[in-house]
Amino acid sequence: MDQTQTPVTGSSEVVNTTWKKKVAVFMVGQTITTFGSFLVQYAIFWHLTLSTKSGIVLALAAVFGFLPQAIVSIFAGVWADRVNRKVMIIISDSAIAVATFLLALLMLSGVDDLWLIFLVMAVRSVGAGFQMPAISALLPQIVPTDKLMRVNGINSSIQSSLTLLAPVAAAGLYTTMSLVGILFIDVVTAIIGLSLLATVSVPTLARATDDQKPSYFADLKDGIQYIFSHDLVRWVMAIFGIVFLLIVAPSNLSPLMLVRNFGSEVWLLTVLELAFGVGMVLGGALMAIVASKLDRIWTIIGTSIAFGLLAIVMGFTTNLILFYSLFFLIGLAVPAFSTSATTLLQETVEPERQGRVFGFVGIVMSVAMPLGMAVLGPLADVVSVELLLIITGAATVLIAVVAVMLPAGGRAMAAAHASTGKA
Image (cartoon, rainbow, N blue to C red; front, side, top):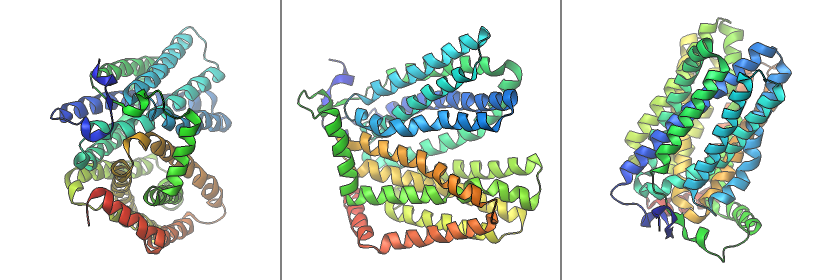
């Protein structure tokens, strides 16, 4: 029997002395695949922008590119607890690659209808929705529990680096080989990534091979009940949603404040994005170094308060250098928040339920920020961005403090310390 089909009961039984090699191969493969996906993401949006110059088309592109991922995340989370997670990633990534390859061939033959591009964007979004919970739940199967925080920090730094490099690379490629060439590059990167992933042995959970396992919808119901009844998981989910909802103001409205107050030159916006991106890269690297010394739950609370305070100061600043510095610090804090929350869930939730839990995390991340932007975006045309930054910043600080003081917060902290073994 192949090792990928060996039933196990938990992550502690599958970790061995070769875990570093497994993780390295897995992360290299995911980095290559993600880089190709980022190239296509930027190239498609640029292609639609330049070829249609239509705001409605771009709005539809955003819907087809992100909404399917949010919809399928919860259902994908259930599957991630019922099948081999490595196989699930391979199937979803292969479907994305096939859809991308077919689009490239059709565009090469002169067929470039908008509905076709939107359809492929939707397929890619669905594939991403299936991958996210599977990847998050797979890592604890191949990484020792005490190394999860460090590995998540390294992964965060890599992903942040790709967000800096991908737009530059996409711009250079788009001017020399157009969208079709980039689509083919994405197919090649997917093949390389899948080939590397195929060499990584990932055990199948015992429940996935059990003929007596509950039905799909019973698993779905169990996952929902677990999330809402578990003190720590419910608390982390609530903080995740609130912070992502309110962080929209400093992250997405800051460019608008920059243009209104400091000028509309492209280089100003470029420096702003670089400041945030470099902050995230350094933040991820810093997490990889100091991860073992940090208390998970206090890092979540501390970074939440930091987001709020930085947003408030941004709302009052009139100095461009200070404005950039504050945005850099927000980027620096993002990996500490997301890595701590992700690691805490990986350490707390039993392997058999992690797919469903991270499926809900995917929904929260996919819905919270667009929802926040839908509310705060129109408000930015009625009141100043500065006022929105101050209000959302103060709300973030208040909510973070209240989250600790409430009885639910105390129970969550006790559960977190029990799961991590820290006092």
